[in-house]
Amino acid sequence: MEIFRDAQIYSSVKTNMVDHLEGKRFKSCHDILLTAWQKESFKKDKTFTRTYEQLLPEGKKTAIEGCQRLMTLRGGKGPATCIAFFPGTRAIISSGPDANVLFHDIGTKGPAKLLQKMKAPVLSMAVNPKGDNLGIGTEDGAVTLWSIKTRKSTLLHRHKGPITSLAFSPDGRRLATGCSEGLVKIVQLPGNRTETIPIHEGGPVRALSFYSRGHDFAAGSDDGVIRFFDSGNKEYVNMVEAHALPVISFSPSPDGRRLASGSADRYVKIWERKTGLCKMEIKAHEESVTSVLMLPDNRNIVTSCEDDIIKVWDPENAKSHLLLDGRGDGICSLAAGPKPHIFLSGRQDGAIVLWMIIYRLEFD
Image 1 (spheres, one colour):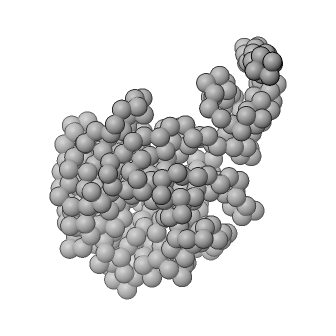
Image 2 (cartoon, helix red, strand yellow):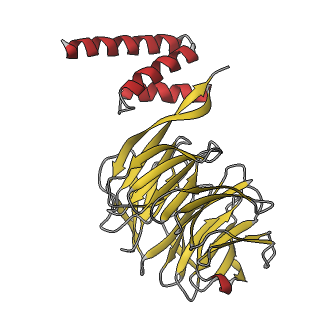
Image 3 (spheres, one colour):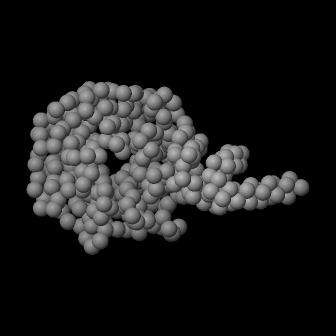
């Protein structure tokens, strides 16, 4: 009887949602959806997900209500320390210490395919904004550019030390590379003209980030310091003693005004780009922060940790919306996903998880 009653309720909810959606009564449809979905702890449901996807373009995102584990993609034998999504495709790329660059198709459930075998472990990776080139940095100091169109790779240049960070400029015309020797090189594409910026005093450059406009960038180093550079200037214009331990990860806000930094000191901090002032600090985890990601909503932040925990934060009040179990012996990377409300996490066991953020929506 309980099963029959639940089936009747579900059928009624589905009918009401479809009726309101077709009649463009988006608020009523949204209210029914959230009420029903919350009772089910936002578990997977094709009808609910399809309705939510149709409502998203019609409403304005406000508070985060929940999160759903959409899909888990099988990876390689080593940790997925580097992951990236190619915009405009179904392709997710992952790599790590085993030096295998893997291709995952989110449209299939099959195993990942070997894209390329590098000569040394992969330490850093970045996709350009247009989604046609992939930068790969390896332990032997090589920086390689891989084209999704030609499926061929080109050696751009070499550092003497391992490549610890990579970042493309917003227009895709520059690739910043950081190495363990405390050097940043800016490669102009095409043509491969390179300028070198030494910051030896900081130690290995673990994090690099351009902003949403221009070629200004920031570098985070092992000394816990963040250095802000203007385009064409080899001397930093601002320097902040950001963390007590190495800076591990950067993520700029979509509007280019702020920068999130994650560190081995377990803190995540938000920085104002122009002034270098710390706008917010959060003790995010009990162990080292492995990655930080600012969501496209320009407000919320995702953080990951070696203890297998992912948290979603509202930095305005330093409170965690969500605490997610990675289920993979540790989370080692985060990346933007195929849609603004989806993000990726790379696990120690090599798998990649796609997560869907569920927002409360407002309608005019």
